[in-house]
Structures are given as C-alpha cells and as structure tokens.
View 1 (cartoon, rainbow, N blue to C red):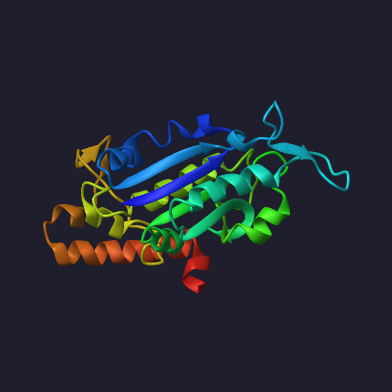
View 2: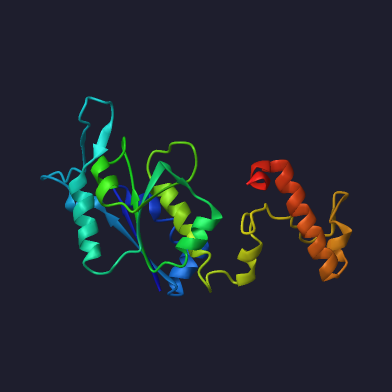
Length: 226
C-alpha cells in the first residue's frame, strides 16, 4: 500500500479533496494511506508559531525550519521515504510522466509551503524534489499537493473502476486525448461522429488516433515539437 504524508499549516484545506471521488475510494479500498500532519505540532513557543520575519527585510512571513525538520524526522523514524517533495512555483513542471513515476513509489512526503515561502535551508537539506503545478502563484501548497496526490492515486491499480481508462488519458502517450461522446447520439441537431457508432474497433481506433494528433497540433503544438 502506498503511503503519502502531507505537511501543512492549514490541514482544513485538504479535507474535502482527499475524502471524495477517486482518492476517497482508493483510501477506503486500502490502496493508499494519506495522512495530513499539522506543522503546528512542532510550532515554536506557547503560540506554536510556524513562521517568522524574513532576514533581509523582505515583505511577508517565512515558514521556520524547526517544525518542518522535526516533523520529517518523526516520520522518517517510522519508514524510509522515496521522495520528500516541496510544492513550489519554481520546481519542475508537473507532467503525466512524473505522476506515472511517482505512482510506482511506496512512501512520499508532500510539503506545502505557505506565507512568503519556506526557509531555504529546508530546500537545501531536507527536500529531495520540487514540483510546480504551473507558472503562477497560489496562497499555499495545499491545493497543489491535493492535485499532485490525485494525479498519483488515480494511477494505482484498482483506484479506477476501469483501469484501462487511465491509458487513454491526455498526455499518457504525449498527445491530448481524442473527443469523447455519450448518449443521446443526436441532441439539438448536434450529432455524434458516425464512426463511433459503427461498432468497428479498428476504424474507431484510427479515428481516435487521428483526432488526438490533430487536437495536439492545434491546441498544444509544443508537445508535437517535443
């Protein structure tokens, strides 16, 4: 069973994303164990502070090193972790290939930044990998961590009702996925392509391949160039 530990100062932000849909069902099936840890457990002083002013006078508060260090030390005493991942806007861009890779791991720690960021010594000495979900900044790493966890968990065998569904996801073969349709075959004069109603698997596969390539060239040409 995979184990994912998420370190955060706002655990409430992770409650709903990790309790429902595919991730929630995977937890109930015993396919993955996701534990959310409040860093204030190791906060400093009577108020359990986890942040302080930045050296150098920059605006914004910075997460302190001690709570993160102590939490990682506590968890690492119980098991060995394949990766300690910091969700950061300047990390490597999350791709389907990365999610595929991480889904094969046994134990992961996801560290959620907050405020202005985290003490850089955490990144230098504790974190083994940094991942970004896009070239933008959000209020904290909790939503990116939930996104990363979801992209990993859905790839665990048994998480999806139809395991072959993940094989046709966008980016699995480096292309966007082909359009999908369902009943009714015609609505408001808008029709499902005839080939999908043909019952001919070879024709359908050829159409899907053609559509995937055309959509990728049109919408994400950089994927073709890559």
